[in-house]
Image 1: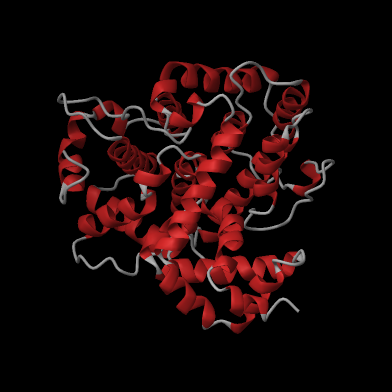
Image 2: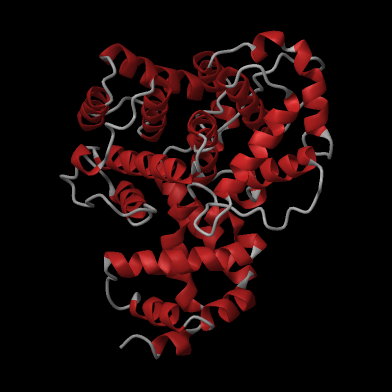
Length: 395
């Protein structure tokens, strides 16, 4: 089975019978195994299947296998008396629901007629990143860490038989806002920590929390998450965000304890989450470039700036054309260089830029989950493309 070639899902399904234990997993067992191999943390260092050969998979291939396997396990754990054909059709219907104008990704260019081929393209699109530039970037880590939203949203879709988009969007909002608060909880921040917090606070897709230092859980709706897996996922992703190669400061520890209380999880569960993140990073640090830097926040900001600058310059002509056709966006981008835009104006800019990114394949990173973190930098670089045009709109 080679996830980089056509037909890999069909081979996966043929081999499924040999993975009898996996097919019988509960969602709790699935989550534990996905966390063990790093899928929950955004870096798959292994696959959850029992290896039938000595094939060496790339990280992207491992991520594809783990995502698809997780969706299959979720289907068989949720639906009784069914078959593989029904499972594949349910997946396709699920992703079609998410493929809306508001969605994080687009499947409009997927042409194959066979269900398995369509799913292969969708899975590829879902995790696609420009590894040559983003391989060492925290946004890449966060993008893949948010992939488990697909699994939870698929379960929601199967149980409730309704469009899962609002559920997926709300969960992404909750995770992003919680991570922001966690980053902001650090007692002593240097200038690079401040940059990272600022980048997060200006990047939340659904701006519904305060960016002040006293922002609290009052701004995040956690009560609706009653499932243990949802709670552990929120906790584990937050533990990943506050990771420190030495120890968490009092502010971060206090925040994690408060988050556990808000989620109605025990202190033991909170401590286990933090400990498991530390152990995973210690064991696989050499495979996760981001954590090899003495100051990850500085590295993230520098690397992200280079990434966005490169993408903007490479797509300069197309961007100029698309932006020039939107008078309102031209005016707002021009004014953003001389004043702070209102929350409503920022949301308008983000929405229109995301629409533009959907039309330019090279900018797909901006419409992946976590890609919204790069948008403020995109806004920063764009005015440099058209100095004269933007100067006219500064008034």
